[in-house]
Length: 556
Image 1 (cartoon, one colour):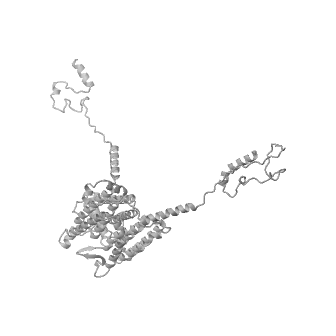
Image 2 (cartoon, one colour):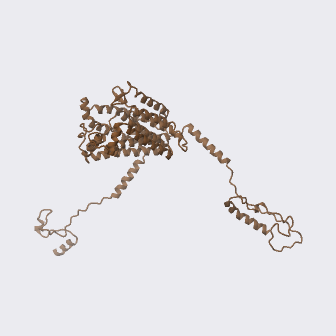
Image 3 (tube, helix red, strand yellow):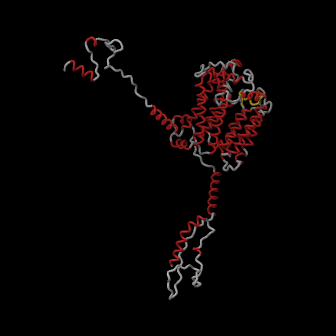
């Protein structure tokens, strides 16, 4: 093969070969052509392997479905969210209270130490609720609400309750402040769920649900108003409303209570000078950034200073006595300033995830007590969190409701962790979770926690007796009902015997006609008469049978 033919074959096969010795002597990666002209035979493949986005999304979705389909997913999610929120709360309390703590006590770790002690006690109660059987909570629910109400009475007694800034809300025990109005939240949730779980009939106006829950709730609200503490009063009313709603209170009755609650809340808000000032500042009636609207304005400045990514953990400027109660009511502003918009949205996402898990547990529970308890606790967390976030960002007037678990407050941390323990207990008592725990041997986490095997829900004996009585009554009522009336199919009658010598003319003669004997002139049988007293439908059904009988009568 000649050199020319070989070159033509190389060009056809897109194979690069040096044209002469000079080209072959050039460095690698360079050509002998200068300027924009390049060899047409050389091509650079820059294409990347395409990514199957739809396949990735499908795989991710299937993985999430598989994970959520596991029997203990709800329990693990509650446990994970509890740890994440507790750790995040301690970190943010340390960051937000360091300046104020050093200014007051000379130590930047004073407030966070107290918060850590209550967090440890709360985790102990969280673990304790997982160890205690469900029947224990129902047995001592009434005792708990009585004790909590007595504590609300005792805190109002001078010398027993501690007054701070004109409000008498705390007990001082071994240097630690305990707020009974926070403890009554847990007691009311457990007692209300226990009370309404045993109610079987709602009635037209829900009288069976309203008594004695509403009178006890009114008494508790009255005692808390005397402290005074309007924000906690709203939370107590919210707990009662959530219990009644999930128990099946009729909509018109619930709507009437809602309107009454709004009216009372407005009256209480305008009855005090400082609460009215907050409301008017929110509505824009007063524009005083250094007066009534000072906290709300400084909180928005802190959020704006944080931007998208934040100024960094511990580098907030609002906590340097610019924003009052930065470690308590307005800790979300410090989160937004130090962690930015991403950190603030992460906190919102954590509470939304907690709300979804709580409602999932409520839907999957077959025990009425656990269903009501988990749904009420979930609503309490969500509403309390978003009221706090709402007035920090300026969507609601300032109310003083704390951000659950994240805000500084020992008794609040204690009660919220206890409620999360109750929610985790309800998650372990889901039917699939009970079967899985009962069938399998304890593994890593179960071995560490050494939790008891939950029992499948069985209705109490009283409810079983009620069910049996209802079934008996239903059976007896069905037996006493008259059997449905059906049209009887008439039997053809025997024709009258003919007389001897009579001739059949072939004409149709009806009974009672002329020239008939007495026997032949008798009225037709009762089966041939149409019963006009029966309904029209029955007459239609019996028409075919009657006509068949008449034809048979005529033929014979």
